[in-house]
Image (cartoon, rainbow, N blue to C red; front, side, top):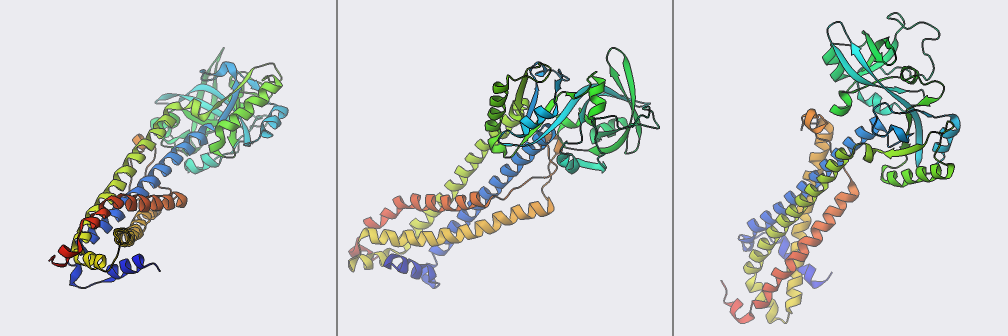
Length: 426
């Protein structure tokens, strides 16, 4: 063990009255580091949890990439494409693609005896990944979805209704519950009325989805648009890794360029990422990163300033010791390293308590959801937190390094202490 670290340990381990001045300063410095690190851990956990929760909600409802007719961009219903087995297999074979599922959109009106509501019907088939929808169900159960007539030859009526999944917002506005029969009206060349049975109620807490979308069979929505066979609004693509979303989209574009970007009926295809479909949401999430950097800078500054003040007090209290060491031949650099090692021990205790407090708060919130939020404003009912151990380790290392570096300048105070005068210092 080097002599500097040995002396620093001896100083740190003393418990007599010689530390009566520096003890409060050491405690304040330790608390400053602990509070700063705890706030940084909680901040990063909240931002990561919030960003990933909102991202998963948006992409869970709208997938990562949508492949559609180029004429459908900007249109609520759009133009159809023929998603036959060949085209579906081509999409599934593209690097980065995990799953492909068809969908069809149409507009309609839900009507009860007392009220009505304009909604968007999203039709999905049997291959649709319903894991996100299942997590959002608050009442009832998801039905099986079909791309052929689910009534098996029976005429649609209140006795033989189609299945429908509505949002909690719609259920409250129309005073519906699971099992109720509701009629939907579709306006085309002729007004069509269909009977639906409410099989489940979902809630995403995202107004743009809960106010607008209900889920039905792919067969039902495609037929309301006059589409037959494998015609639908397009295909939703789920990628293996969200971080590789843009690269996967380029892979899809390259395949379509090679194939002429046409379906079997000559419709021009295009792909749109979730970033392009909901740019405002993701731009808002990106702004959170700025807040994180500001908070991290403030907390590191807090830890640094408390450590500087603590070190200066410790150096002044140890003036006689510094004089003795200089009289014995110790160089200024050696004495500076002693106090820097002493500071490392203080910072280490602060980091330990900061991790305990910060990680403890995160685990408490994940277990109890004690901090609640307004879902109409924040899209979630409780503050989401996500522990990322590599980032926490990086915060610890960065806090330690920055705190030690800012102490290098103040440590030069020892060079101004002269042995002769320090011996008489009281």
